[in-house]
Image 1: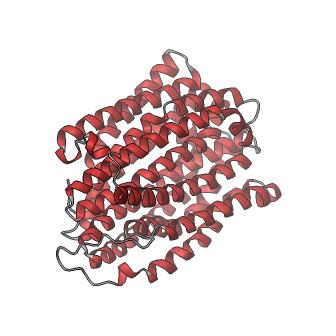
Image 2: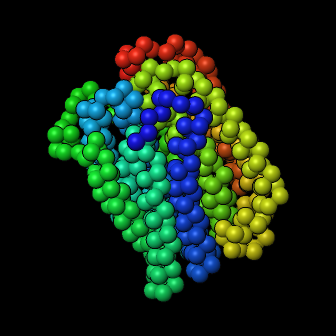
Image 3: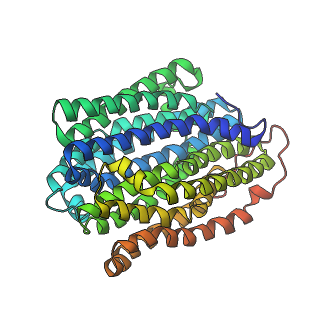
Length: 454
């Protein structure tokens, strides 16, 4: 466990973020390998089938992760205030609500899978493969949910290394199972889905067992699962706020994907490659954002408001340096990056994905601010502004998908994110400047900071 209320802010943030960054990098790496194996061994039609449904699985994963990370802020706040009883209550409530929600979402999506895929404009030639792939992923969604719930609680108490360890194991296992199921057993896209679900299930089980044995504070009993009104109110408020925030983002992406799926296989493959690369390039933003949520939550609980201000400022400056680095990489190597992901040498795929990356990375400083600010605001108790900002993203992407893309084609998709970024960053910057927590003097020892802004 790591107390983030003492020591140099940026140093603490970096040491906490680095294991999480490596872990998520491994997660993205096996996703990229998955994409490469499917594209190289099964062909571009199979890759398009996987890519066309990835936004649906991303939506559900982000919805659950949003709740887990939001609820973990409450765990972190109690941990910062040294309130061990409520740390256990909050961890128990996170598990109970998270598992129940994941099971319900999985069942509902499986029941209505056909209409959902039709709504997404999945083309007839790839529909059977797309349906087979996503059905298996949805059936195993609970495995992914359990791992992410355990990881969020561990990070809330300052342990970002253990989630890394088990994610690395899952990544290596996923790659091995990809080769086994696809190349040896010839299971097609279903093999890729089974590889993902099995590796996640084993990782979740190992992480849960380790957490109980290593940290007595997190060895939960039936008593810790009993509903305590105030704790559960805080969990639901912050968890649902973060869940809505991330799901609005994913719903917007899903809306764009429904438009992209009408442009043909090459465009779907190009967009899939560009989004995979984008996931890697934006990884520091999301990792540092999640870190700031925990950091702000612990320091809010301890009443150390000046540390919150310092941590946010230093982290923003750090990410701006990363933005410059990414632009240099993309403008010198974009086609090679696309080829590494897809193994495709079709010029249309290479050119389309490269154009997407060059346009988007030029404005990366804006999503850097967005991800850092909205996670920080969740950490200090502002649950409304991040959701409002994310709702602007949803509305903007839906409008572009149905109004702009039909007129100017895929270029409308490329331009959509920079346009929406500049719109949604405005309320975040305005409300961050007005936030009372960021203007307060540090609380006296023992006073804590367990207040909410609503």
